[in-house]
Image 1 (cartoon, one colour):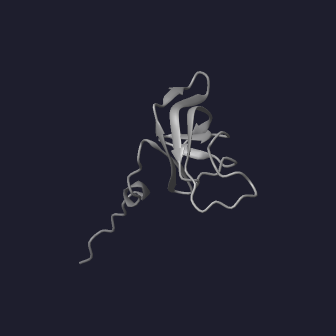
Image 2: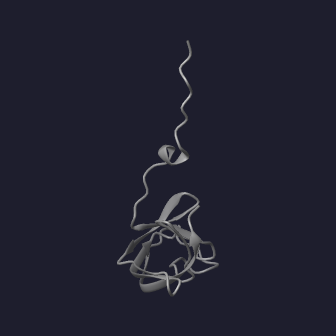
Image 3: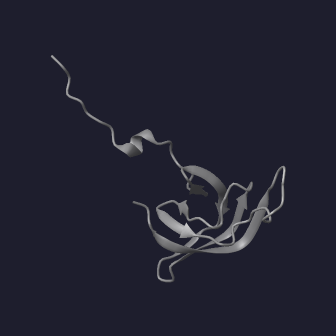
Amino acid sequence: MLAAFNPRPMTALLPARNPNALYQYGEAVAEVQGAVISQANGTVTFQAIRTAGKADAAREVEYQDWVLRCPDLPGPRPGTFVGQFSGVVAGATCTIVGKMP
């Protein structure tokens, strides 16, 4: 007799996310500190955002249950070659685009 197939939900297959990180394409691209979420203003303000240059400021990021647009994410200047990059922005504000599906 065959046992009934009981598929696990997709979320059970994904690794747990760091609640203090920004994600793009399923990968943590920045660490954040001191988040203040203002749904009334449609913003999330961070005391600090720290990245190693993986974040693409032109693309939306995921933070906890939110999809954000953060044009002030630090990154290497366009047209430059950087062997290793680390950047920090203090007091960055991101716009809430929507909720995670």
